[in-house]
Amino acid sequence: MNAEPRNPEPPSTEPRSNGESRLARGRRALAEIDGEAGHAVVAALADIAPDFATYLFEFPFGDIYSRPGLTLRDREIATIAALTAMGNAAPQLRVHIEAGLNVGLTREEITETVVQMAVYAGFPAALNGLFAAKEVFARRFPPAEGVLSEGSPASASPPPGVE
Image 1 (cartoon, helix red, strand yellow):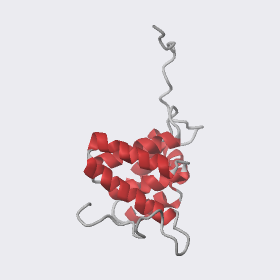
Image 2 (cartoon, helix red, strand yellow):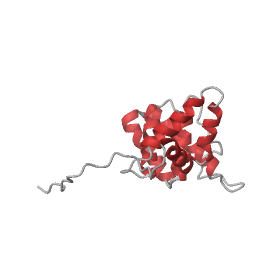
Image 3 (cartoon, helix red, strand yellow):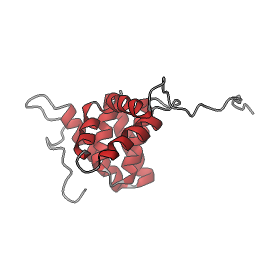
């Protein structure tokens, strides 16, 4: 029996900080992942819940996304899978599909991640996830003028009754 060698040192659980505050680390991570889209969400909440912006920067992006052990690509695969499985987070799923593309995921990797969720979250959740991906892909990668993509209709909207 070939066992994996044991590492006597547990993995680091500290975020990669370089002396940055949680807020600064979160702002940097969010900008790297979502570009201006994440900051637009924060700005949109300023008049109703300004503290929520701080929470959004510090916890998910300053603490979790900044941890060692997974790349941003890996974290976006996990996030896309989780949001797909939830089945009720289409706006956030679209944001993270965009983020996945921003950190180097391919359309095929994103599509396969969503398809995999059919096994664990069911076909309705996977269908909704696929239509969210199709919408993002159509926006990010518009077909050449006058050319439809591989036999599919020009619209990225799901057929009636699917969402």
